[in-house]
Length: 572
Image 1 (cartoon, rainbow, N blue to C red):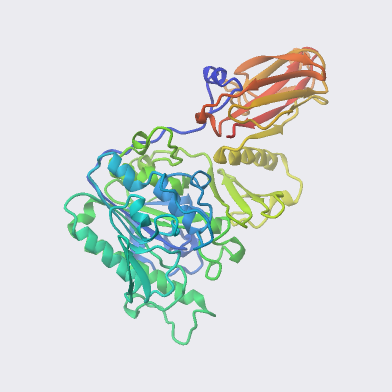
Image 2 (cartoon, one colour):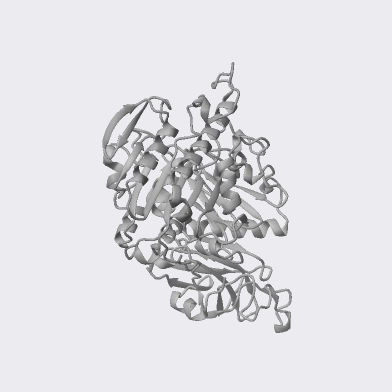
């Protein structure tokens, strides 16, 4: 992606904004139904063709056959961050919910200052009734208690506030702040509650049905809901068959819900998603316990995402464009005719991309180049991952020491992430992927980064002598191994020049034998000879829109030294 020279000059340090323009969905009067499964990875969903022996899910298979199956969707490694992302369209580092919330742990819930799906619907004057049925898991006693979902904007809530029900047939059900014990089977009661609420609506409605299933405790659902043979088995020692039964029971109840819509089914957008990968105790090949829920490996963050309804053109398609869970926020609102980006108050950042164009146009391409997920929390190692079309980078920062470590995988030959490329010297392709994904990770989290790459000439280097690039901060650069004045090339690309000429470009014709231009030459700034040689500095603007922006720098001196290059990412 290329930034104009005009934009570079405005940013002083050649900042490259990478935010994609949203695709605005057409206004419709469709109902919107989001169904969220708990601990349900792609290997458990038969339409993905990944798992060795997935449980029977004919209703989900039918949704995939009628709609769009997203083959490359990332959620977060655990449930609370995913739910916060769905409700707000914001990545975890913004709203602070970085891991599954534990009661009385002191971890913050979703702040009441966050703008949520129902609040945006109301702010837009959409006329949609809205409700949340099922699992909340975004609040604690300091975050409005039993009324937390209602305080967060939902006009109706019925379900469980906790991360899991202790018993699917004896659990604390909260309805609009009032808590009562129920012995109704949780999955079935949640569908009952959904159908009851839908039946009372007289206009378009927007419903999130967040199942507790198939999260623990593993158990035998009512026999009429599944076909698994559980005779003589113990869920403590043989959890797999019970998990399969719970998935099948959930699928059966999804079928009852969809049939219960009656004539409304044809004008209802149905979206199904898993909140994270399958739990380690029941994960199936090709994933293993080390790469399951709670990790940023594919088995922890890649989830099924299915969309079927009037917005889908040419159903039965598979879309492999990168998708993040934050994309559901503008997409769901777009299906209800609301432009999330235009409706949110000024200064409120939405990280999502509206997927409406991918639903309506089989020839459309997605706006994302990279996918990102992370987890963090008290006592946890901070983990993050970013991937492009070919490689995936994982970063871990140890909670005790702060030590940073990386893993890099070539997904083309190692899709299940078994062979870390960083365990041995990198070839040129892997080195480039490592550099680009480190930059991509800094982009995604809006972290300042200065990363050297390439070789301009032997003996000349460019390095950041001050802090990493930060809004309002001073960026200072030193040129080592060279003397005399010169100039600094500022570029929007490390791939090609403005005329399309591929980089690097040899500079032998200029008399600089063995030297190469490594960045596009959008603008140039003078280099001043300092006490230790030529140097350069600039103060970056304070505009928050520049967070996560990328620029590339390379210096040359009049004496013929051409430095290595630096990629910078603007942090906050």
